[in-house]
Amino acid sequence: MARRILVVGGGPAGTFAAMAARKQDPTAEVTLLTREPFEPYEKPPLSKAVLVGDVAPADALIAGPGGVAAHAVALDTCADCMAIDRADRAIVLGDGRRLRYDALVIATGALPREIPLLPIGTPRVHYLRTCADALALKAQLRACRNLLVVGGGLIGLEVAASAATLGVNVTVLEVASRILARVCDEETGAAVHAAHARRGVDIRVRTVLASAAPLPDGRIEAITGAGDRIAADLVVVGTGSRPDEALAAAAGLLTNDGVVVDAQCRTSDFYIYAAGDAVRFPGPDGLVRLENWRHAQDQGMVAGRNAAGGSETYATVPSFWSEQYDLYIQGIGWPIQGGTRVHRAFGGDAMLVFDVVDGRVAGAMGINAQRDLAMARRLIERRIQVDAAELADPATPLAALLKRS
Ligand SMILES: Cc1cc2nc3c(=O)[nH]c(=O)nc-3n(C[C@H](O)[C@H](O)[C@H](O)COP(=O)(O)OP(=O)(O)OC[C@H]3O[C@@H](n4cnc5c(N)ncnc54)[C@H](O)[C@@H]3O)c2cc1C
Image (cartoon, rainbow, N blue to C red; front, top):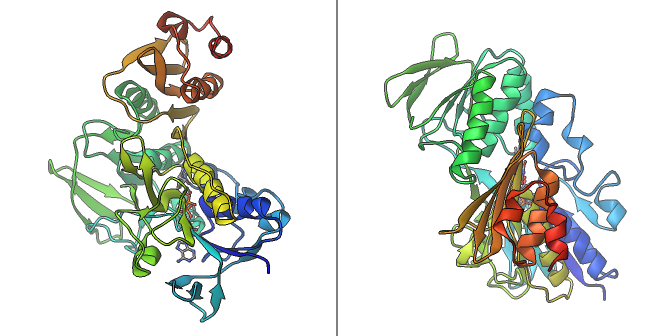
């Protein structure tokens, strides 16, 4: 009998898991379940091209133009998975159906981290995770003159850049001493900050939101910890995300701020795998959680192949990208302590910084340096010995350093 594989969650982790499972075992019956009514779409454009342009989420399908059907995967939309019956190896859907599995992949992703002062559902307050969220924000941005963004992380700043491009006045509140503190080094963060300032975005660091209340005309008045008052037509909250582990936790799977998996993406149940933003997995220094597209794709593929009989290990060099104005910001590598910083001297708005440990590149962060960063990934993955002077010299192609290995 054909192996039945169910995948819960229509983000990149679930979609790539389903496609990889079917490729691993072409006789398997693979079904991708998503609670949304559409073919799985990419989330990165939601804070960028969807807000500023005519791009619709349906223009960027994760599985490509033919959708998952082109990869022999069945798609079940509006399928809200309510429970996992582990004893019977079945999932229970909101419409009452029970679907049995031989192997299950959980890829339920993450949810926005809500702040009590501005609960989800408050009029004129937006959180951004789904296509519906992006389209609601886009519709209201048209008539918005003053936007307040709470949180100077990647999503908040991408929305700030999109809104500023549309001519909206934007204020960003960031509680830390600098923006992008969780993802970027100080120098890269400062370059991004300067790009926003040049477009008139008012970024206020070391600033907490102390209160928020509606004004008589419907706008929202925010008061900062320092007592400054900001009247905003709209507020976007970008204060991070938390793993959507409810389904796994209710089924008694091991969770710890994320569904805990081993190096082969297997949960505490032999028949259940998990991948993506929802997951905590073994990193170089213990269990970690990552929230980026590439991780979701790569870990999803490993989980899918293993659910279909494979026995692969997921080992990754994490990376992220962000687009703000004409800046393409990228970071690669695990956070490290005590490395040597090497700057590759570019001109213009491009920059590239390496972290070198014991003569090897351990991390790289750059702006508008895509080609070099692709090479830097290979230098990191292959643990190649490098010469700091050559790394710093833009006349030495990084490809040449790769060839020397
Ligand atoms: C606006 C935005 C912009 C981003 N931009 C970038 C970027 O530029 N670069 C980058 O590297 N990363 C970016 N990311 C992050 C990246 O998109 C995520 O890391 C990635 O989507 C995680 O994939 P995932 O499959 O684990 O989870 P998700 O994409 O969150 O997908 C999980 C899916 O599971 C569904 N689901 C959950 N529970 C159930 C259930 N019980 N039943 C059925 N379905 C369920 C959810 O509805 C959701 O569709 C961005 C994210 C957002 C929100």
